[in-house]
Length: 259
Image (tube, rainbow, N blue to C red; front, side):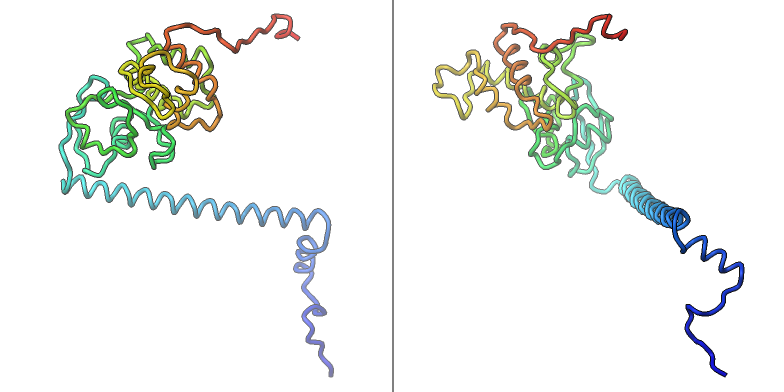
């Protein structure tokens, strides 16, 4: 008796044939099956990724807890931040940026590239602008650190902050704290007569800065939104002391709002 061993020709039980028809024949059933399979695969991948991230975070926290309990290599550091003394126990390798954001919850100072290339982390130390991502917190003891949170006097904004708002010198705002801190330090540098790469005559240093001078002096602060023209206008107004016209404005008629 001849037996056909071809699996494709075998008879399937009725229940199995119905299931195969629902899943593999054609039309909407097959598309639904593929969509469900894809969604299920993505869900498993996302769950796996979240699990790995959570495990990594827990491991990091446990390591920090062990170091904190053992007290090994930790320094007692006293920092003067915006006129307030902060006592911290830090690893000597902790940067000023991480101390500000992670230990003091002062998140105005932004972490951008973390390699000293974008300027988003700029703060002032003894009135000089520095990149806090490249500055060890331990080296700041006994010095006066000013962040963007410390520029305003109560509810009164610093003139540079007011100028940035007036001239719309920001878009996403991520780089803005570093831009403002850098611009504030620029005012002091110009007042002291410090020259830049584009200064033609040292005798001219200390006066009103040209747009070219401002662009050069602010070149260490990157704005990925491209708000540079308005940043230059804001800095020029504060540095020169001469008010300039606001170049943007919104005029919306009541009829247009009701339309």
